Image (cartoon, rainbow over all chains, first blue to last red):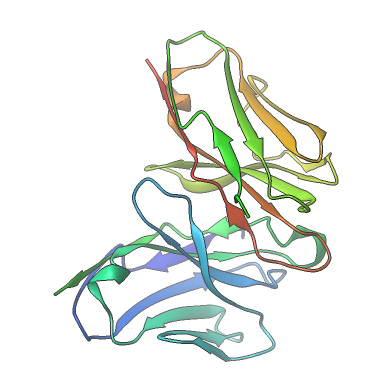
Length: 114
Length: 114
């Protein structure tokens, strides 16, 4: 019940295209859904996050879509750039004092070709 | 803001040796997390502290692993004795309780146990 399933494992997109990564969760106690970006040799860095009381959140080229009834959420990267090439992780955690208790998806390696 | 500081960046040791990983959280953050990243298991939470008190250590693999947080600005993760299957990247992360759900990761310690 603690799993977060992420797909696809890898994704190749042309510059300017849209990258879409999907995640599904089971635990209805999850209250916070962040996306992290990780470059080789670096720690994960928070990209954007959403709570289940909204269905969409947009920050620049990055958008999270959230479907509470289906227990699914996705990351859309508009106008993808070569600099976006990285590994992306979805995650979920309970709320309150447990916000950092993240369950991560398995990651998606994104490659954006120039 | 110096971010979360981890040391060493790389550690190579032989099976059976004791390994100590160190972490300095962001100043003012009072919640600290230890995560481990491997190809097989992805990113998984080992233990976390709130206000220097261990809250959940259910992710600690076995008794060979121990973590301490003697004060608000320092934490250690110790493995004794180390085994080859402990080889992984170990991340420390911190956040501020009550006001901010955002979790900030350090750059990690790459541990290789030969």
